[in-house]
Length: 154
Image (cartoon, rainbow, N blue to C red; front, side, top):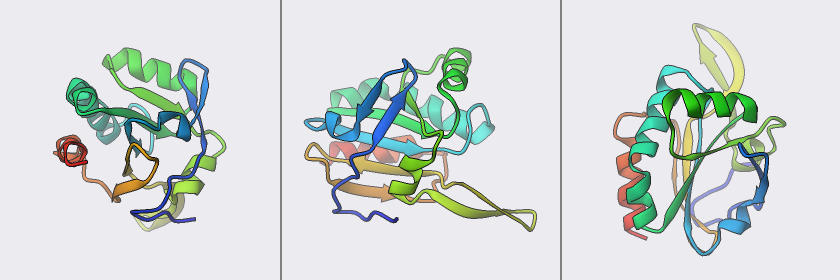
């Protein structure tokens, strides 16, 4: 499935690192930055998480929460958060349901080898649950700042 800007965000269940679950609709009333990344503790994913963490206060001041999501377990997320002193929420999508709902589980290629993986993508969901902006195939450098500007424009 592929979602587009203007669509209502799929009301999927997020499994957060504290072990709780939260439906996406529970974030309504605030903007939500939901970003998908391939794997904890890899260079690009670490930089992205640190960049969003550094700007967390600015996102909060603009009325937005941030949730990063990968297929890593919550236990792995906990280690990732502790190791890099991250200040954002992370969610585990072990069964891939959230990735499927947002169209971020894609075929990738590395050194001629085809495989399935998470597309580094970010979705800006407004206070009503509508997807206002989508960034696909994200380049990490400057991305968190660009998303913050979009949040301020809501």
